[in-house]
Image (cartoon, rainbow, N blue to C red; front, side):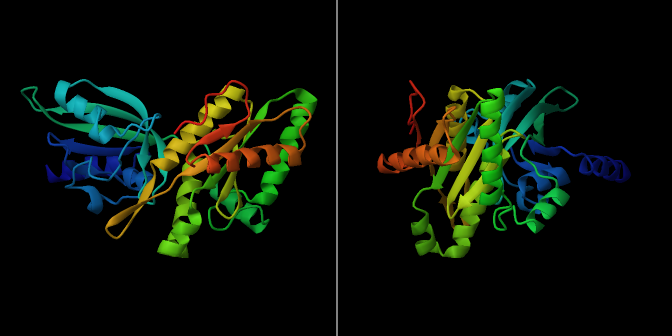
Length: 309
């Protein structure tokens, strides 16, 4: 029996998807290597803990905290039905990772539910291959702190998108994001914590866009997103989703959690736009959002319903 257990554990540890088991009280009893890689939490940190206790802390695309409200795993433990879905887990470093989850009940020989298994797959679209990332760093196109494209690469992509708009009518949008009250974070907690906040926000933004979109660090606590082949309404939908995910991201510092929010200015490129005019419009809307209370999306897209708080 011990050989069989080790054999199956070795198989599960070599699967690319995250896998964990819980008992009937939602206590984690097994956590594979892929779960460690995707979440940042080692098995020793989570086995024996309840899955709702500040580990994955799943939220849906509206920001609803599933672990304390409508947890799909808890529903499966109750009714025995298998479930699938798309959620955003909390990484140990603070950022949000989009994952596809599949949940199934575990039953004993009498058919009684004694636990459940959840399989989750990293659904991040914006992953830069390591060698390419290293090459870009050497070419001074990647920000060393956040591993995002820097201002130089943003400028190149922006010029390309404007050219494609003029030549082929390919629509694109620009989202300018700024971390709220970032100076207060540095002044209160120090620059090391400030750097962790920058990395957390960078990862949350970068993990939750499409592969052909660009998320870059513009400078300081400012980020710029260039999203192409997208409608005006979907630019706003994406911006608000990202704002929500940042709001629900956190990392732990001793006995407290560090949360931040972002304010965004979102615009759709016009045929008469230049790089300067497009950035200026997004920047003006960003600071309008700051003046309106922060943690919002401001846009000049007609008939929008922003900001959403």
